[in-house]
Amino acid sequence: MPDTFDDHFADLRAVPPAPGSPADARRRGDHLRRRRTATVAAGSALAVALTVGGVAWSQAGTQSRSQDPVAPSPSVVEPSPSEPAPTPSESAPAPSETPDADLTPEPGGPAQTAIAPDFPLLDGWPEPDPEDVAVRGPSPDLRVFDERMVCGQTVDLLPSGGVEQLGARQMGITRGGDRLLVTFPDAAAAGAALERVVTALDRCPRDPSSPDDEEVLVSVVEPVDLGDEAQRVTLGSEYGDTPGLYLTVYHLVRQGNALLLDEIGSEGGGSKQGVTREQRDARDAVTGVVEAMCVYRDGGC
Image (cartoon, rainbow, N blue to C red; front, side, top):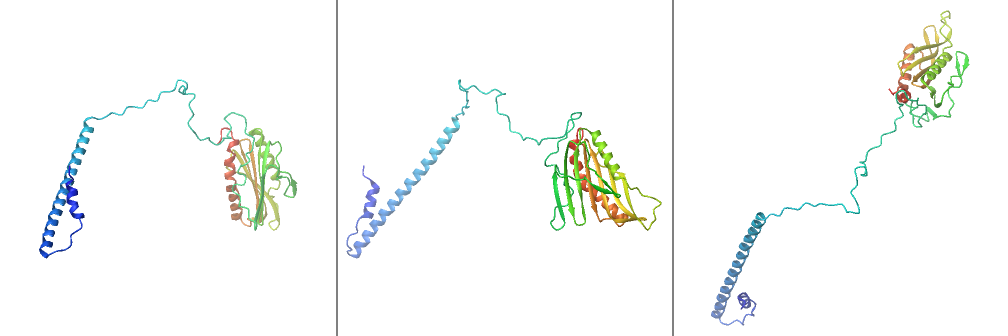
C-alpha cells in the first residue's frame, strides 16, 4: 500500500528546479501550498482520531475495572511444622524501665544500716571556694566530732555503738564545722546516742549571779521540728543581755535508726537578731539531709 504521507513529504524534500519564468514560479508556489495544506489536514485528522480512541479506551478500561472488582485475598502465615508457634510463656516480654533501687525498709522489717556512697551529706553547704571555703569528705574514714572545747572542758562528741558512718568538714574564713551521719542497729540505740551528745554539750548553763560586765559562756538546748526527734544546742557567750560575736549551733537529728550531727561555727552573733538568723540558717541547711534519711525510718517518711 503506497504511503500517502511519504508522497506528500517527497515533494517537500525534493530539490527545487532551477528558477524559470515568473509564471512558472507562481505555478510551482501554488502547487506546493496545496500540498502543504493537504498534509497538515491529514495530520490533524490523525491526531483527533488518536485522542478520541485513547479516551474511549480509558473509559472502557475504567468501566471494566469497576464492573469486575477483584477482592484481595487475606495472607495467612501458617507456622512451619518444624517450628511450632511460641506459647504465651515463651513470648519475649515487653520492654520496661527498671526502677531505681529503693532502700526504704519494709514496715516491720530489719533496719537499714548501710549508707549509700552517693548519700547527699553535703546538701545545704556552700560550694567549695579556694578563696573562702574548703570541704573535706564525705568519707567514712574522716574523723569528725572527736574533740571539742565546751565551756572550758574537752569532750568527745563522736557517738559510740554505730554500724556505719559518713563524715564531712567545711573550713572557711568566717565559718566552719563538721557533719556526721551514723546508723545504729535500731531506733532506740540512735535515740540513746542523741541523748549522750546533748548531755556532753549542755555543760555551761547561764549563771544568774554572773555580773553583767563579765563574759560568760552559755549553752542553750531546745527541741526543733526535724525528723523523729531533734535538739538544737547553741554555744556562745554573753555580756549581760548582749550575745557575743562568736557562736556555734548544733543540730542533732534522729530519723529512724540514723543520727545526724551538724555543727556550724561563725561570727554571726553580736546581737539577738544575729543569733536567731544563724540558728535559722543552720536549720535550713540540714533539711535536705534529714529528708534523705527517710530510708532509715520504718516504712519511710
